[in-house]
Image (tube, rainbow, N blue to C red; front, side, top):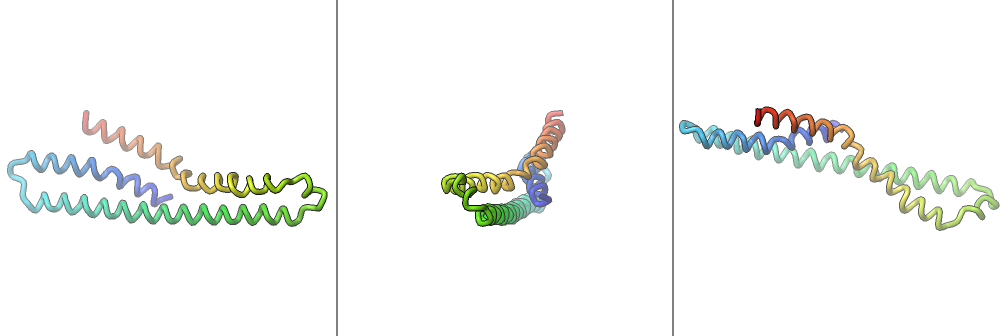
Length: 135
């Protein structure tokens, strides 16, 4: 979760860098070192953004696969312990539907659950930045 928060914060580096580059270009006495420093900081921030994004995506995918496999295991264990007369009321289509769609929906929830934290924070930071720029 912390990685997605960091990634969200790093997503704001491009507008800030463009603002810095615009101010640098408008200045008459700007040094070459200052321009290079802004460019290198933008490059490093984007590289860090990519690393954090890939790390978080991999972590959420592996967590989703673990949840999926444990849910499928729980379904199969339940089917194994059912009595024969209960199995007659439980069709193979229902079992297949549980495994293919319902379990996959639970896996997808994990992938997008971080948006509950990140989306409001992104809106607040965006509104604050807009207020600072516009006034």
